[in-house]
Length: 459
Image 1 (cartoon, rainbow, N blue to C red):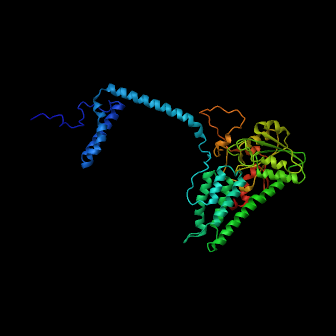
Image 2: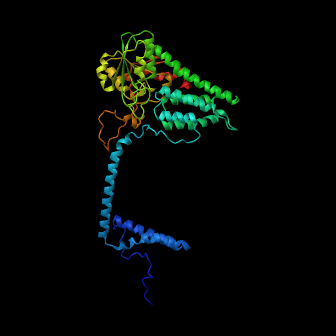
Image 3: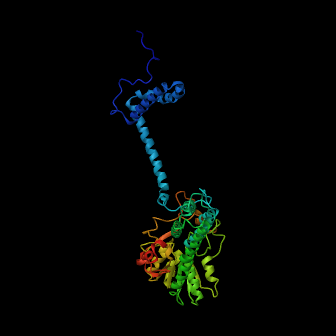
């Protein structure tokens, strides 16, 4: 019987002296697995018919390096050492990248600023698109202003809405409003005031009479929106002006931080009543609300949009004596202050105040100097949640607010330096003397009684 030629030998015959897998190195076991996988692929392609030739090319390339599997364990050790070195080098690079991005990952849960031209998904009303751009550009700031602008835009959405056939307004309008709300949240994180107002609006929509004419139902919803703005914001601010104005006397030195619409109205109303006092406006980056009317433009701080709080306080007749200072100068000014008036973004159930970044520092320094701190806040800013610090929930200002002044020294470019500007902080209740609301002056320890006094459904 003739001896078989080399062509008759099977292509992937395992050597008889194949060592056991326990005695193999990790690299050798990996090579054996790849060899077996290539053999199975070649066998499958040989049974595949006409397309086997085209599919067998990758198997040949895979099986080519496998012919060297008969090398000694020394070559396997060399390969394993090379693999270990490669793994070590890749781990070092990964650690370096992680070290660079570790600082940003800590703040990854903060509300990051969105680009101005963020994508539009769904059937979005033009009024909502415009409002989203104003939010993302910080042209509308302040919890009251954002809430009023949101409700006003929803009035346009409701008036232009048409109920589809075989649907009711009380059910389908809720579905229609959902993408509008999502668009606003994508432009800038939702404030507590917006959340409470939207929750109340949905409650009113769900309670609409299904037998009412559609236009009459839409008019009724718009009227309820107007009533909400009037009762919970406008009239509430007037009551707060009267209550807080009683705490201002002639010769007082009032200190306020940043710009609060409620505090501004309180000071203007007290001046109209004939009281003579002076005001210290403490301000800080990134928004500089005490001096700018709205958010600074891209050319900040060269092009001024108006000295908002200072201008309004100084243009009255006679003008109110004002002092403008930045936050680092606060300790030297607190010795002259008689009362501190602060605004609030929201009010937690544990009495903590969530407000513009720097408010906690002002309240704490005032407490150390035994200066009373009054927070002026409407009850619709109340939140059922409990906040313990300003790190669990916050928002970052856009990078353009970190642009240094024109004549200031420019920092050298540092690859590992990232400038982050959180917009809010949390003031502990122990640093607050009283909270002025439309239902009266409330100590921070009794804040949780606000929903019970107003009714749970009104928030």
